[in-house]
Length: 436
Image 1 (cartoon, helix red, strand yellow):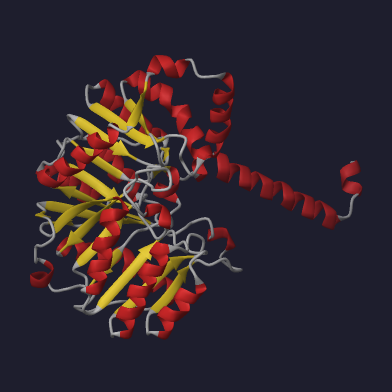
Image 2 (spheres, rainbow, N blue to C red):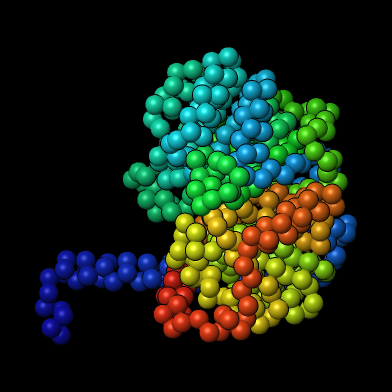
């Protein structure tokens, strides 16, 4: 009764405060209504089979295409020369989208080339994320605009969009003339320079795509460009005709590929299905590299199930050089169950590993912007490409095994002896798994 003695407006604001706190708690710690209680497949065709390719294409509503070519690029010593060379050869369009843009040598060089090409008549479009690109140099942006380039922002912080601000554009889609494309883990920042020789040089990978594989990547850019500024991009200089897009150069001709784009507004969560089907259909090997490993329950269970079934499952993650220590602590909470199931876990030594790759049975390789976490599958704008090609798959697999030479394997018996403080930290940080 004493509560009713307060003025109505005080009770109203108190109620709003309680409701707000409850909403925050539910959003941070629970997945109510965001996904089904369990995910499974009615059949598990072998990776690389026609049934697998048709099934994974249909399940994520992405076309299965043939042709194009791919080339794996390791670290900044290969990534930036290839990218800048493509910009120099551009004839009509350069479309650039990456999450992080930081000032420094890489930024200066990219702005210099983009600005010069814009002044020479190439249509340059740059889409920056409102949070990841917040440090992009204002002077470089203005010079690019003055030269004729277009710069747009994805969800800058403003009233009316506050509730969506945490849903970021994490995609990597860099496409030249619709014929050459780049996607993977790298962005614009000096930490991506070099060859991962010390802790100042991150370990990362990109894939350079040619032909229809690059044209297919274009949609990851044009979709968000249109929703950010209103310009819907069409025409042969954006989507080249089939005969032009089919030109093969710069790598091995691909047999099949599926390009997947994911948006948090889409409740179908295509990336969750894409990765789940990939894992479930593995017969021999699953090799995963991810800088941030906070998978949902279904993903962890299917990985463990495959390991118990005799599949060689190996996961490569960062060591203490990570740029996100809370996420690393959260991922540690999953180690014991995975190790007990037979999964082999490694931590890369010497520098941050930011590469995002998955290769299954040596022939189905997945690369792109997505991390192996809930945020990438449900909250971020992401894009990945799955490539069914034995030569490219073997290349990705060889690269993974070479990275293991700089990694330390986590042993189950040693892991059980870790300290109580580490266990407490793991339990705390995993509470926020729904937001990582």
